[in-house]
Image (cartoon, rainbow, N blue to C red):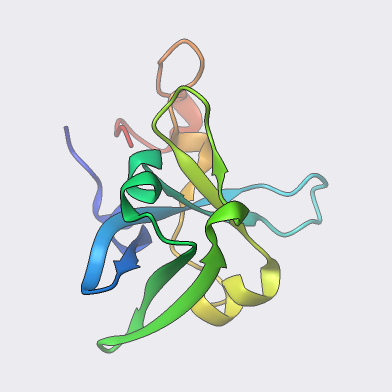
Length: 129
């Protein structure tokens, strides 16, 4: 499978006691109303949180020129699916802008496969995420 270049900058790291322990990516979900800003989520595999066994989950963002910024969250702030190996953290607008910029690189939710496991035609090309 191929991951388009536009998605490479969406990757963030989950930090462990000795450095990066897992990867995650940013997902942009449109707001409820057309004028609303998109909501930004950090998404990872649920087993990454389970294996870390940490109460505080630190997300490391690459902010450019080799610089990084960390965002600490409580493990309880992460939504974890009961059956699927997925977990997500909703970032409020202020930390999202501070860490990822006004227009963060994020996977738009529109490019995910739908319930029939098909890539939507409006997803901007034939790439699976």
